Picture 1: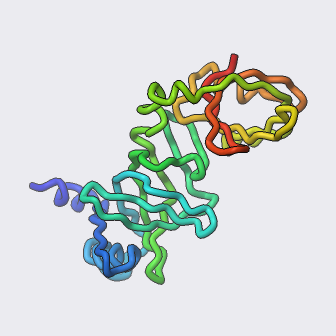
Picture 2 (picture 1 turned 135 degrees about the horizontal axis):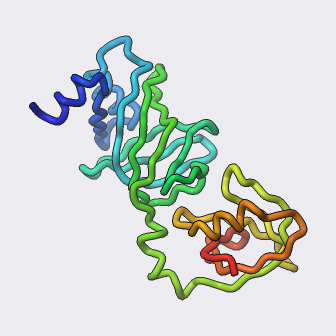
Length: 204
């Protein structure tokens, strides 16, 4: 019995996504997903696996590159959960190159939505040693804390920075973040993602 047959017998649809240069991602997904699930089974979940290409926060879409090199688009919202090493993260924490397994649902009107994303390999963690030259020592006063999304803002004197927790944060750093308080002075090593965004590497 093939792997697909085994999954099918267990009532789980296997999502074989495909796209062509002349077709939209949603249309290509619909053609294949419809063939697997059959008509009228929009609520049933399927799985997709691949690498993150991009996250468009404005349109709330994730661009996913499959193992065959084809790229498809999936919708998400603020209910979508991202899990890495048993920690929850926001979709905005995903980076191009992250290897993921997603749960996908057909919500109708040619739209395919993911509510669960498991990161199997983080591009930041796998490439962290190569970015060591960009790590800087930073300090400042904590302004705001967003524990749900793993973020805090920092008054670093002449600039306010948004600091994000990395996927591969140690238990000690996670505990330190959870215990942060407004007005507290913190010191840490981090990498600038842009002029106002920093990814934490380690508290000290």
